[in-house]
Length: 123
Image (cartoon, rainbow, N blue to C red; front, top):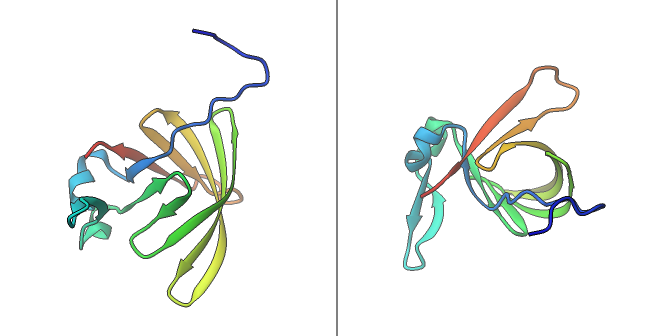
């Protein structure tokens, strides 16, 4: 095993289902259909909601966002996505901080003290 390669930054694996409370994962997400696809439950928002991260997109209950760019800088992940919801398309920037392998914090630059924690669901 090689440790500390200069100039090499290990990208955080964001892939998976993320909920605002680890205890609520099964109330936010479910596997449905023949393909057993991971999706949101009918009342996922009641339990804090979350998102599903795939290699090239982020999905919310009502949004489908394509990742346009991603930059990992140590424990901070800066992602720009193009989101479609209904009739409108918009670009959104996410600032995420990796706390550990299964916890991230979404930060809102310019809004002091505004953060939302997400926990990886293992369902």
